[in-house]
Length: 384
Image 1 (cartoon, helix red, strand yellow):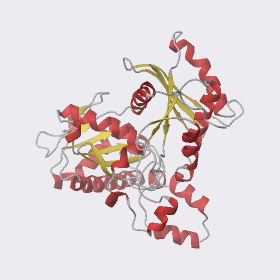
Image 2 (cartoon, rainbow, N blue to C red):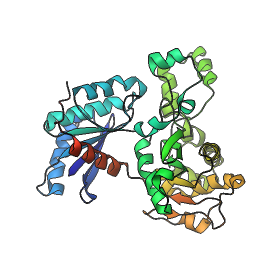
Image 3 (cartoon, rainbow, N blue to C red):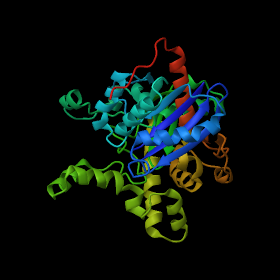
């Protein structure tokens, strides 16, 4: 089955085409500057995409479209075939992910307008974490806020964790359903997950992707009273959102959101960049320690995603802080680059440390093919 995988952003549309029969990647790319004159909306982006695909497909046709949808709320615990009601549900969840869900819905509608007969599937970032026990997902807030607004911890990067956890288990020769691990998904957005028996039992992101680690431009954990203080000082909700999501994190600490830029600056003696990396590594090490306890003793520590796979300096800074757990790196192995899963821990490390490349698009394509294949009824029509 040829599956077009789409990740719709407010101003961009990332895509891949995969043949799920053999795992072949046929095409990939990104259409940017959606909303500007050349590409006024997601419909125009799909028109541009339709002009790019024929050469790559060699006369074959797309059989299904899989969409990455960030927030599935409490309703969606697995991928679903999209129909009118599903797309409206995705839109109703927009207050929980205002930067992510609305573009996803626009992408879904644009695909329907362009290819109305092609089935579409939504694959939710939050779905993998629906196994969190209540003591992990509940905030210490009045229950009325949960009932009325759905305020609880949801977790994100679930598609990545769902791909990496069984891949790491297989690498170690462990049954994926018996695998206990701490997995760090480190990119511009970053999170950690505690995996027990192959299932998520805790994760650092919460109600939104803002909670948890220091990220490229996101603050991660802060004292909530800081927000109350700033409101009293004249900040409004829009300004706070911009501060926490776009002007904080590594950018605020070190002057750049890109880890590579900060590493180069730190090597050149930039004290702010060095401190930014130290703070981020310290926060990550604390979470790793906590989740090692949460799973009852991890069988492995796994790094994945852009920084996790390529940032050897940051991996080294983090694992240096885990000596109390007996975890250590083989410094030479840690510096080697590869697109394959690999072991980077020292021989005397208490548990193995792995780098396992993630492939969210492959996971979305496979989930889409499975849902479409087993569906007995055609996809519904997303309403306008």
